[in-house]
Image (cartoon, rainbow, N blue to C red; front, side, top):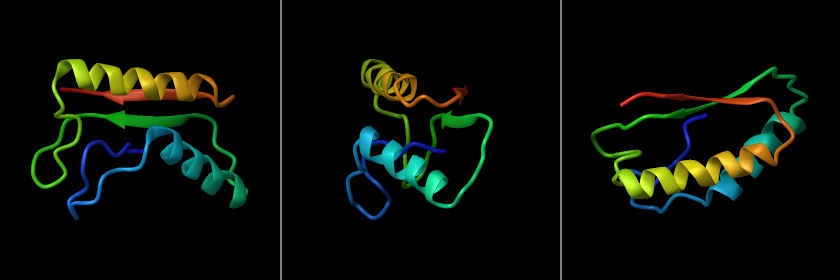
Length: 83
């Protein structure tokens, strides 16, 4: 999953991490998917999306928020990151 951060290219603000994760897990469960590990891609992008370019303090706070939610999800998960 590529978490949405900041504002989408359409100008619409991203949903909260809690809402994004809930919708993601619901899509997995409601479609009967069996997944071993859920991977979350945290890496800066350029262009219209401009993901994870919030500055070190805000990026760290947002990543910690995702980690907290993932830890409480009861799922096996990992983070792929670069940059």
